[in-house]
Figure 1 (cartoon, one colour):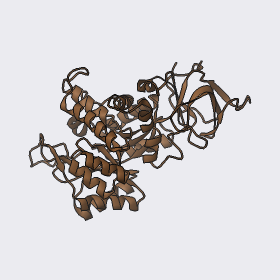
Figure 2 (cartoon, rainbow, N blue to C red; figure 1 turned 90 degrees about the horizontal axis):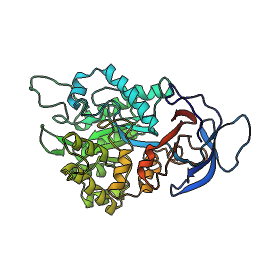
Figure 3 (spheres, rainbow, N blue to C red; figure 1 turned 180 degrees about the vertical axis):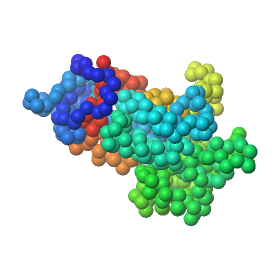
Figure 4 (spheres, rainbow, N blue to C red; figure 1 turned 30 degrees about the vertical axis):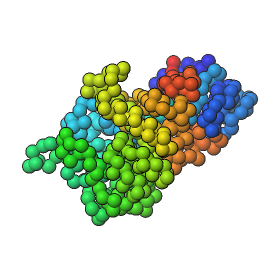
Length: 415
């Protein structure tokens, strides 16, 4: 039985040697459980995995018998500076909420994320909140506030005449929720600016609506997308492409992006091209569902077009053999509910094992951190989550969080 502890820790507990005793530990290949197994943690990393590892009084022991120990989960598409659209519209958040208020909300969102067992986020755009994601990342690194590890994309890139807020009298220069840049020279400059301000990734909107109510169309040429990728890689960074139209996805793949975000209307041919080029799909199913719910749809009713399109995308992606990673677009829906993406991946065709892998090993590989994150293996960072139920049997079990370790330190423990 887990020992009682403060349920909501104000900051991470001090690092110390720790032993999780006799749990069901997810095997390194993610396919099954190592039963009645110990995990020894030293200096924030996994030192050993096995049975009866130590019996020293100096090592703190936590009994996790009967529980399920998995790696810290990873969400590759998050927006900490947004909150659900049924609380405030996107326009109102960007135009009416102060940067200070949005950043404080981000601190609360980080805590909810960590308590849900998600220890790493790729933060894909501040949506008008400047470089606040970099500030949140540094606040976690400096142990000012508790939160997940953050890979920041800062402002994102959009073409002139696209994105929002939009629909205003053209006399007014309304701030955008991303950085406007066009042409080879302009985009090269914008990427350099974002890198200089702390970006870990570059995000580009490869398509978007030109006017409110219009369908999305490609916004950047192949040459422009290639420039973004080239400049990002010169700085050692990769590019994530928001793309829902088949043509924008095709151009993004040809340009060399690492991930496609959403990918709604990708054809089977384009998805096969993604597989061939090693481009990963982050389908953001939970956001599509949430937006449909905000429009009045209830789960169990006839599927609206947005939800049906998500389901059909996963069917085509599985047929094409595309790698699918967990990217939920959380912020559109409540922070801490990231697990909804895994539940929907399974509902739409993945096995629970595949869904869990999408938020562990696969996501770690996208981040270039497969040697540190995503698996329970020696020398990996001790980001660990203890669950009361088996997520390989039911994806909703990832909600049964009893304990979270972040780099070997106690971040959360359920009473």
